[in-house]
Length: 237
Image (cartoon, rainbow, N blue to C red; front, top):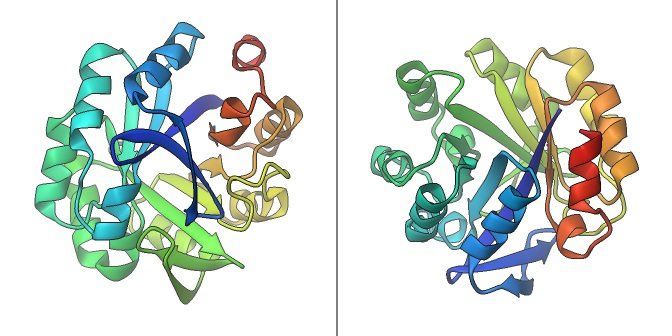
């Protein structure tokens, strides 16, 4: 299973939120590149980079941070936040993203998202399936819907999606464990490559997600708050 540390960006700084609430912002480092290099120095190969300013404003804002990390590390980067139209996608790829994650766009403009999958390939376009109480949330999690997250994933699997990042918003940043039951259900009902995100707190959590069959695990606050020792985790995985 791939270990994928997360860097969330607001105003060019590395931050974390709790339950996606922008009012809970905590700055961990004003230089995201330093954080990315720390991950790389500890054996990490992958990075989940989120433009929280972009997610809120519906257009990419922090592409310079993406470019800096992409050009000064060898990390494989999946990038999300504010990718709502073709020019956003082009900006992300031009600035070094290896994959992009589309959540709001997949919910609000399915034809365009499907067009991206067909044009760039299912290995380049990740479906972001973030949910609050099982209902899909969009616009940096500021808007909720009545669409069930599992049904959402299954519908997109029919359209060619292979990779899915699913975040239980209620768990995100709370350090009280991930949504094992939800991930188990997704893996039982679909054939997607599932990347778990939200609430991962301990190495035991990571190993349990691996047992369930998750393709990857995105880890954020647990690394920043030292509830997971990254070096130890990389040795195990």
